Each structure stands twice: as C-alpha cells, then as structure tokens.
Image 1 (tube, rainbow, N blue to C red):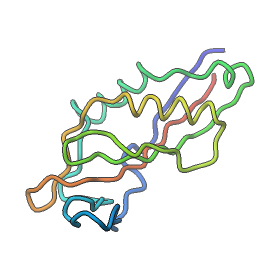
Image 2 (cartoon, helix red, strand yellow):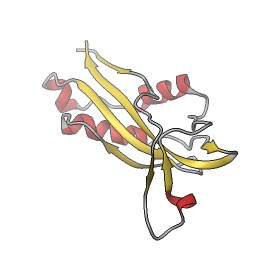
Image 3 (cartoon, helix red, strand yellow):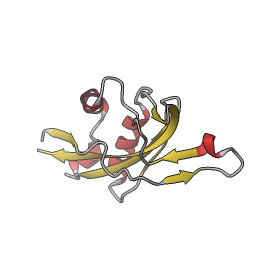
Amino acid sequence: MKKFISLFSIFALMSISQVSLAQNKSAADTTIKEFAEVMPEFPGGQQAMMNFISENIKYPWKARMNEIQGRVMVQFVVDKTGAIRDVKVVNKVHPSLAKAAIKVVKKMPKWTPGSQDGKPVNVRFVMPITFKLE
C-alpha cells in the first residue's frame, strides 16, 4: 500500500475573536489573535509549507498496517517571534495519527510573524492534515 498524505485548507477555520492567555501579564503580551491584518507566513509561503509537511511527516506504521486513515486538525500559535507553540490536536482521531501530525508541526522552522497595526502579534491557526492510504 502506498501512502499518500494530503493537506486541505491550510488557513481554514480562522475567526475574528481574541483569547487572553494569562491574567498576570499585560494584554499586549498574551493576546492571541484568531485573525490579524497581516497573517503569519511559513518561510517560502504555503507551497513551501506543504512541501515541508510532505517531506517530514511519517505515516505511522501501526496506522498503515491497520489501514487507519483520517484528518487531524492541529491547532497551534505562531507567536510574535515566529515560533510555533501550544501545539495540540482539536479533533478525535487515532492517537498515532495525532502524534505524527503534532510531531511534524513542532518540527517547523520559525514563521514570519503576523502583525496588527504594524506590530507583531500572536496568531492561532488550525491546520488540517489528512492521512490517506492509496
């Protein structure tokens, strides 16, 4: 069986709300935007990100052997410095698929951070990664 991993709507599921992370820091330091005037960007753009994921993701052996497929919705924050943090899966999927998706997202290089009013901001993303066997 040949593995095939596809990506769908990389920048889907973003909304216009804000979430405060901590009350003991200033709002300017802890606010996470769901949408920013200038959204963060993977180095080289969307195609480069898709290539990075395709080249670095590993289809879990156990999932492949048991013909387990599915879409993993990975949520993460691109912080003001472009670093990826707070990576987690937000849908129910097979644990091995979730682990593989988290691992590849954590492996990403720094992004160009998003900005609002000319200042860098933290931005939340939800990225679907689909595992499909052919």
